Length: 57
Image 1 (cartoon, rainbow, N blue to C red):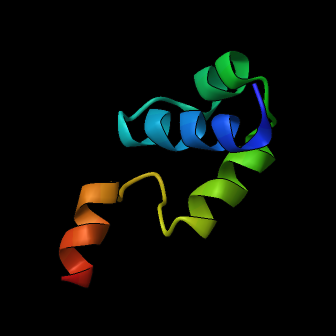
Image 2: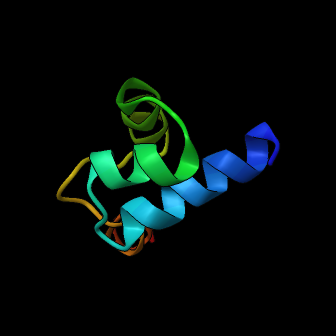
């Protein structure tokens, strides 16, 4: 799995509400990486991607 695929997997799992711990185990990335990707995508633990899209429209 390349870097882009891991990023997509992490973001998809965040959208589903998975915990950082389970994402880290499945995607084999650190919790810090997950947090960085979530921040870059404009997500936090309480904001979904669909919510962000609605805010931008």
